[in-house]
Length: 367
Image (cartoon, rainbow, N blue to C red; front, side, top):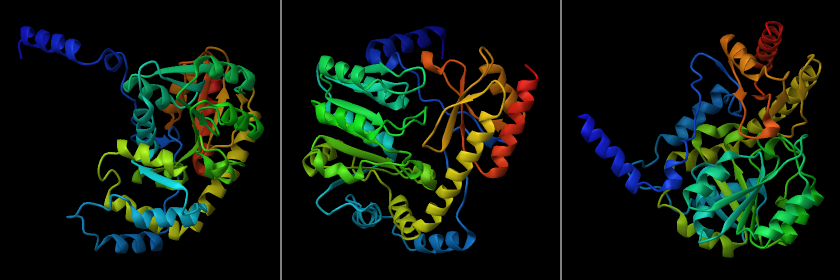
């Protein structure tokens, strides 16, 4: 392609791609090849060999030449039984929770409509709001990553958001907003409140028990963090009137046949996942205590499967690279003033966590 042709393409891109798309960056995923992967909040444990064999046998006769059940009927039955959802609760599935966030925003998008979130929080709320042309307004967390609920309520009253997202517990901080404060927000909200419980398997509280008491409340979850990240399945529950409308934004057959069958199978054997998440919670507590004992490190409380910690001023980049050079990949954070000098580590196996601690202490010694 000649330089003139290239310039012509760039001019056409500028002319036809929406400015809010061109102004964004694609979601970046770090290359973890050859590294201990502690950057993406995954469950580090695989299924036992006997269970994998039984799962593969289940998949053997699936008719992959046919489209999957668009309503995911068997999967819905399995999720309702496992989660304790009544038959009258609306339920919708997505290709990960990200797709459901996009569907929610598409359903409420319109001129001058706004999204409200605490910040820092899950970056996809803001990214996807921009893609559908909605303004995303952030309310800054305090320096200890707690939420000033009164400030959030004041912002909600001022901006009248069509939808607000509360990650509970929050990512990347791991904090769980007190239930009383969360319910104050739900009660005062003019539009939809989506409580994103991506880390419910590791948290001490859930809004599942009050889902039917607040018609404006929707519960969003994913199976990724509890051990099924490769299957990409999220679910949204709430009043059927909302779910029916949001479902209209869903692309046909969005949840594939293998995912539907695999998650239903996994839920038949959920005790395996339960034991794994219990091990992760125990390792989280051990890792938190170990980090708290490292001079110069401030680790924050977490009810998720990761820990956010602050390192000596100006050292985050060097420590991130030093830890990576020793074969361990964690997450370098930024983009918000409260995350200055902060890193985040996923809770792995005991061996992986020990390797991370060794790499951290060695990197600190080199500062």
